[in-house]
Length: 337
Image 1 (cartoon, helix red, strand yellow):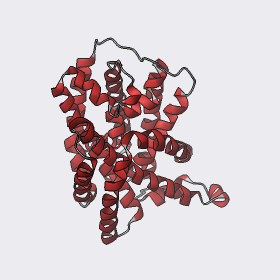
Image 2: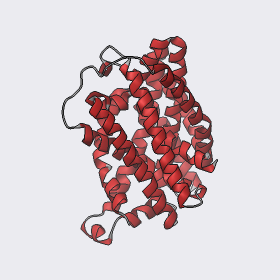
Image 3: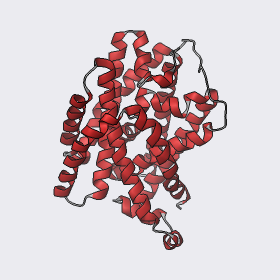
Image 4: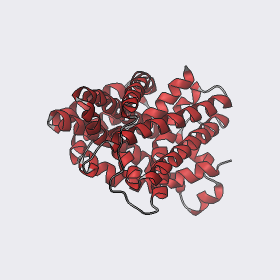
């Protein structure tokens, strides 16, 4: 049961609004056609290895903070040349915070697209919910993921079974060799959030076998859920790039009931990733409960205004940039002995 709880937390970090909406899968894989599907598997395998290697390092050296992890994966020689710890810390914390804001934007985008609700109302609601759950710390995250992730997996599986046998094509694809770099970038920016959140779940892992099980199960689930999103995107016969939440649109082709059912996935995915990202940020920069609660309040208020910038703009422009920056952390973890 502990292993499944850890897997749900990990999957909850990755399956955010971008993944569940189909926007990430479209941008990083779908537009490259069959090569993009290979990229999807490669990307998932990289994430699986990063999960395994990071948990192994954390457990072996009894690491309890991101600062301690950086000291372990960065060599003395690398420290002499540049203050890489400070740079990485800044990049990771900035990305965690921005991810939280992007998830909040996805929350408002869903209610605007599906119910024409003004963004300001939904962004305020999201800010309040986030503040309450974050105040419960890591216990709140485990509880949230334990409830929402099984529900998300079940609903996506139902839609996946319904999509089997439906003919479709990738439409206009980009015929270049960027599919592999984009796959690596996808794994890279997802690992930024993952690594910092893997540290608190250390206490739920008993041995090396648990680490292998967690990494393997997480990888398989990521691939299956991503392939279900691909099947849903194949149903769309209009320009997907113009759709804010393509997977929601696709599920609606089965009927309004399925569209609303998929809405549960979107909202659940948003909540799990936004809370996980915000917690990672708060856990990294705060040392006491008073400061934690103050900054929690500040970022939740800020999310109300940043959400108004638009979900697609944030996903398309911010994630690839951090994918490049996150390569440093990715390489350091892989090279760490």
